[in-house]
Amino acid sequence: MEGAEEVQSARQRIAAQDRLKALTPALTSCCKGPGYASPLEAMRSGPVEKIVYLPCIQPPHARKNKPDYLATVDVDPASPTYSKVIHRLLMPYNEDELHHSGWNACSSCHDDASRARNRLILPALNSDRIYIIDVGTEQREPRFHKIVEPSEVHAKTGMGAPHTTHCLGSGEVMISMIGDAEGNATKSGFMMLDGKDFSIQENWERSHIDMGYDYWYQPRHDVMISTEWGAPNAWRKGFNPKEVESGLYGHRLYVWRWSTHEKIQTLDLGQDGLIPLEIRFLHDPAQPMGYVGCALSSSVFRFYKTQASDWAAEKVIQIPNKTVEGWALPEMPGLITDILISLDDRFLYFSNWLHGDIRQYDITDRSKPKLVGQVFLGGSIQSDGPVKVTKDTERTTQPDPVYVKGTRLEGSPQMIQLSLDGKRLYVTNSLFTAWDDQFYPEMVKRGGWMLQIDVDTDKGGLTLNKNFMVDFGQEPYGPVLGHEIRYPGGDCTSDIWL
Image 1 (cartoon, rainbow, N blue to C red):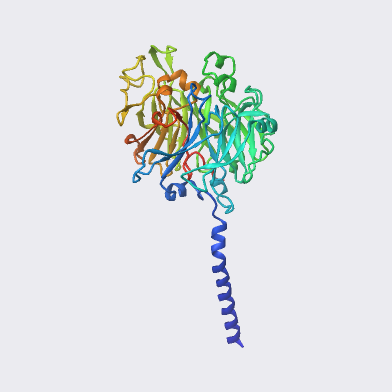
Image 2: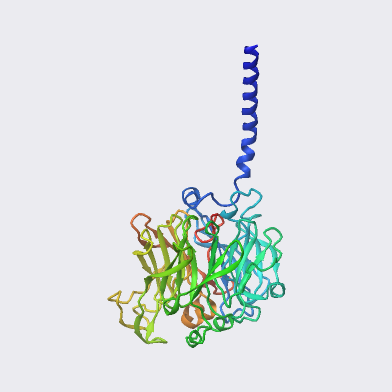
């Protein structure tokens, strides 16, 4: 009898093991959706980028007659079309001003096998149109999936000037809106899209703010923090310093309770934090802190959760103005426009759009960033230009002009995107076409560029790769201006971990 029981028990164990083996593939597949389980996993095992997507915007003198388009660029050094535009998806309308893009799904949906990173959400900053681009059917040749018209955006949200797109763990897509439907700084918030049919849902926010721009959420701390640029009717005309004094540009961070969608705190950065643009939490979802770049003040603030469980901010980087002659003002700010953080949360990068440099900081000591890399790529203070620097607390000489493949770099580094492994930094030079035309008219005339910078991830350091350049002045439809860069496999600014 005892032997029979042992046999029966053994059979049950074998049957249980067989069931487990049969179930394991299903369990594995059901727990792997888009993106990566963690930032470090993305850094270790994420694919090396082969292609990238970026919007190409028509300059002001051509926008009424020519559409913007989404460019696919080959960034594979082994490819015969390396450093070339290999596909162009032309928009069906003119005067869109394509700007920032985002994904329908990312690492926040990693446990949902029904989701895929196969739609690129491409808002138009001037027309308020939202393009949903199919990049899953043919990765190298994107096509249109759906277009959300501005009339629908305005009617259902009351807002306009769509900017930052993030996917949510719920499967929905959220887009920040900078102003109201008429371009005023009176009502701003966040538009919600269904993640499958991309229909407009109700606004995310429970209380409006005057103006918006960028945002980043961190569910483990039940928080989202957003920034503000300015009134669309102001910046769409170009930059007027007097409009800063009249309150048409921002200097605040807004803290939201993620679970209830309520604004719970306002952090006023004051004169040291004028025009806070791109905001980045540390990638580690357990860390209640991050950084924001303030354009006009040329400063970087660290924001963090206090022991009292509210939020505070401290200035940790200040780029000194340069005293100049031959420019619009006697003092030239650096104008920090884009920032990002490496996936291991070790390095912070940002661009000084007026001075002309990209900087790399070691942020191991979170309150005391250390400059470890810098490279100049054009800018307003080149040694052979019309601007003379009469006082500079950082340099003894003005930077020389830079040539890549025989072409002089006009304009200045602006949008930056880092590879998942942190070793390659891609950069374009357009900020917003009205501002491009105001500060870098020669760049607008000739067209923009895209470059690649090699990054020292050991000790720090930036080196321009002179074998790579996309010259958007040589495009078949005339010179255009390139903006934000996205990789099909995800990048350092599109994924948020829960």
